[in-house]
Length: 239
Image (cartoon, rainbow, N blue to C red; front, side, top):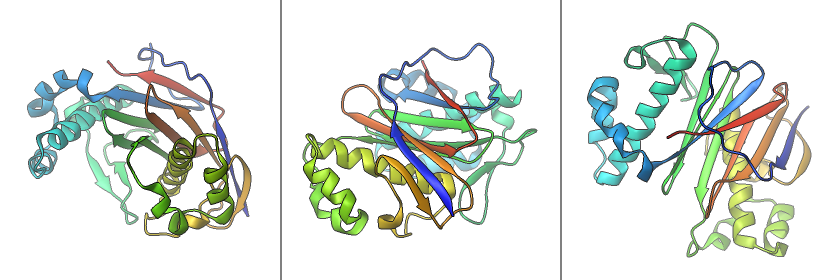
């Protein structure tokens, strides 16, 4: 049996970009505010692949196209710095479990991307990593999906919380981050994915995991899932 350790990180200090792009035993989390990053759209023609251009053009809504382009440009720029490669030369591929990886990587490096509302989060690590961000929608009827996605204990925690809506989104991001880190599909049994604060024994993985949750400005919550052997998380705001 493996364990999953869930908890919060209070008062996250978002720093500017690092001086050197070395991971060591640290997970790097980047926050990107879409409305402040529209300048990245001008780099699309230079940095994105033909497949990425095709995918961008498949989005009907302009905001969805812009979000995709900004996230891919930022991802390529960041990975290029970690790998000492030109961003446009990075080659992505997909493994059998549909998790993306960097075919052109010269060293072990993993990444994960999530977006919601005006926020994008990118996590980069030497080992598998998963990240999720959610905008806390004031009108979303979360009660409707609690029975199919949360255990009885989790449902009780949400409903007894001082802020049930915030707690719902917090626990949801933990489940999503862990699913993405372990490469379990979103169709897997969400109820069996632990999200409550504390240590849980699980049978779906042989690796011990940590899931840490944090607040990103007003109205957003995020969680990152990573291997227990990593000791720290560094948080950066990409300008």
